Image (cartoon, rainbow, N blue to C red; front, side, top):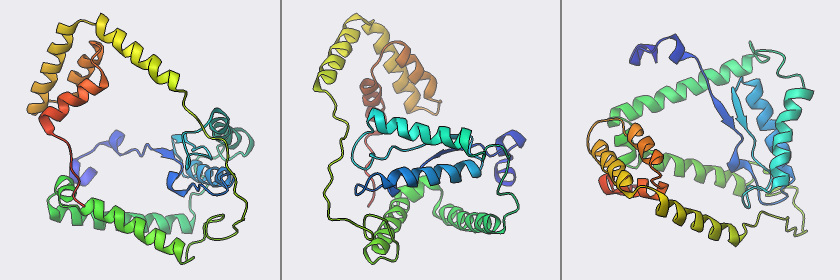
Length: 245
């Protein structure tokens, strides 16, 4: 960052948020996900994360219920108040294993950056399908490891049971959708249509040029332009992205 972009001290301070790995959650034996999330959250805290999101155990099946969301929250609170791992600024500092893994991540990241630079940058890499292909290949390799049991996933390809369990999952009340539609219709009726049109026109102009479009989006929101209308305005300028597969 310093060498390539001239970043100062503030920009080079590593601030980061961590979310536990949704892709590691399993639909089988979902109680195991509580353990997975707890270990992942602990690793994040030991790594110095500034903020943390813990997945609920049933997110492989649906949006979390109030109960499972509370358990995910309690996971963070137990780490914060019962384990003592937040009492030390860098509990893993000096660890040979951590330093070696950090060096390896840096080396592999630099290889990716150099490869993408040779392609003409991140946008060119996406347009060429490189990024999508890397994600697909990684996912395929991981699934192959699971299928051949080179990677053990407890409850999925090892330590399984014959019992079929259907845990309770979140069910969205259809009445909520009707209520939201009514609220939206009320907003559209009561807002100033001329102000909305002006804000959308300004967003179109900003999107067609080189200006930062965020202030125009904020103006749209202040005039009660809906998210769908803002998205439609941007789609009219940029079109809809079609990934190269």
